[in-house]
Image (cartoon, rainbow, N blue to C red; front, side):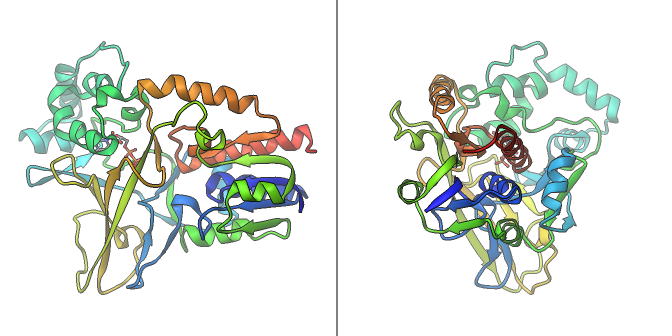
Amino acid sequence: MKADALVAGAGFAGATVARCLAEAGKKVVVAERRSHAGGNARDGHDAHGVLVHRYGPHIFHTSSDRVFRFLSRFTGWRPYEHRVLSFVGGRYYPIPVNLDTLNLLYGLDLDEAGAREHLDRVREAGRPEVTSEDVFLARVGRHLYETFFRGYTRKQWGREPSQLSPSVARRVPVRTNRDDRYFSDPRQGLPDDGYSALFGRMLDHPNIRLLLETDFVEARKGVRAGHIFFTGPLDEYFDRRLGPLPYRSVVFEHLHLTDVERHLPLACVNHPGDEPYTRVTEFRQMTGQPHSGTSILREHPSPEGDPCYPVHGPEAETLSDAYRALASAEPGVTFLGRLGRFEYLDMDRTVAASLEAADRILEGGMA
Ligand code: UDP
């Protein structure tokens, strides 16, 4: 079979680049190893008819007009602003840390200026931010770090925050006002009929041929393509010839509670304590779906299983750079997505990078 492009993976990275090329008149084959498109953003109805995110909660948020406009061609949006509580010592606290978190935790009645002063007093200002631990200590000080971040981070990554690059801790803001939204981007929401429907429409194009349950290595043998877009794990493409890159996986424990209208105080509760899971999500509080029962998800981070997160620690920097050097020297192949770039990208940045990659390829002309 001949194609202008072969895309490995039908998640946000692959589907975006496939769609852009298809609309430019290119013939695209998308090879997806799993039995469905959508990557880890895939959603679907569970056995009880509740719409759940199979691979963990995905809340779309962006400050990119381009990304928002592009995706809005394939979906409408349910306005939704994510809010999260952290469960510590039998009580719930807003996370990210904000004014209310401080007042609740310390029994204070601070205003915004007071919260700023409090943080200025406790944080280790000026500490060089070499690791995630440095970032937490520099921003919120030892006690808040130990209360909300250290245990969660250990569970999530299987290592101390001092063994993680600063970018991980920098994902979560610290606020001194009462804003309790998890994200601050101007656009936030969920696809109004789900991510799977969005992917269905994105990949529905006469120039796109989607092959499910098809491994890239197999597909490559059968498809003569002018260009390859690889969105699988970067080290896997190179047969891990420099050694394996560290990825973190998650065991997703889906549960349904019959005749329970609402299980959690908010859609998502984080657990920095001794529970074996990091967070619990109640999907109906995100989707607004009416139902007599409720479906929840507990996430158990794990060293084994399908890679979900690249682990950005000191030992992986050199190795991932070495793989990136191999990648940029690989003729006719572009590496995209969280796994293909070994970057902790959110959905919007994944789409943005794929739109740019498609632009570059189309401007340069394809074989
Ligand atoms: N984090 C934490 N406590 C929290 C929330 C986040 O320690 O209550 C840290 C943890 O290291 C986590 C990182 O911040 O992996 C990034 O959090 P985010 O919510 O962005 O993770 P994701 O949704 O991508 O799993």
